[in-house]
Image 1 (spheres, rainbow, N blue to C red):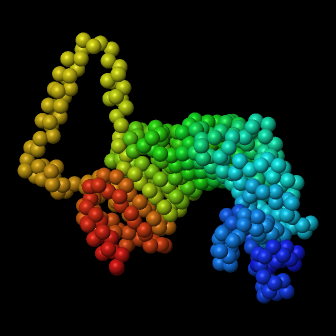
Image 2 (image 1 turned 135 degrees about the vertical axis):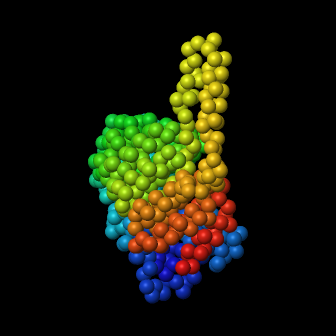
Length: 455
């Protein structure tokens, strides 16, 4: 309160909000001048705390509260000479500004679409250097809306845009305004839309975009038409249980839209994926993304060798999340729906039974040694053993976090060998390991991890 202007102190003193001791007492240090961020929430908390400490709640009128709120805003807007970021309040802040104010210097703006359009117009006259805008969509904008759209279009160079829709609101006019900045945009984050805004993404190249983050957006088909030559971070997090997405969508996006600069891929799809699609995805990462540092993959027993090639190619990996995929045999499913002659159904079933019998005969052990090999595992490397061995042998020396999810049946011996191999490597960082598993007991995992964490 000591940082208030002399005029504000006089006004508040006359109205009984501050005592006369504040009038002649200067601040020992002007803390306000070093503040870089202000918001309505922060100022509201400040005002409420002051009232709670100094007054009985029922003795402080709403008129006095509004007056205190107004003078505090004036102080911050005109004395925060280091101001870089503001959450725009739904009040006419232009009326609080002195000629030498700091609002014109802000670089980051957070706002919502329900704010009075005239406030955006006021701000567009003051600020042309905003580089980051965070928008909460809680109201639909008219097609000819001139408030927020004018503010966006008046900026010299917007580099980062983040939009979160609270009610699946589609604001096409907003997306059109953002098109002015497609050459300067470096980061786009969108959350909770029915579909990506076509007016922004349709047949668009973002030459300098490095970060694309999408969350809870159902329809991603429009990604087929964009170009992202300098993209480094791709993060698409949807509810894989509710949204039916296959990995081939991302394979196509990475292979056709990016130019090998990706460093992070964090995506969500269901675990039920066609093995051929997963193989294609892994091969695309292997061949096109050798700068990769953070990666989420789906893998099954058939793709362990492909994982090895990827690890050899991507030597900068710091984080890997590996999900155990359920292989879908699409050919078998297609055959069931493409029976040309229903009369042959009985014959087909008979053939299947005969083939099953033949396979059973072939698989029956012909000797006691073969029985031990097949049932106990003597002399055989399991897929789990091979999987962990490849991870330990070929993972990057920079690897600091490894997450393994799924029904891998790791034995104690598998885990011990994994850690022994890791110990022999010249790793640059300690490894944070997380195994989310429904076949290997948590006691076994914890026991082995504890043994090596103490060494």
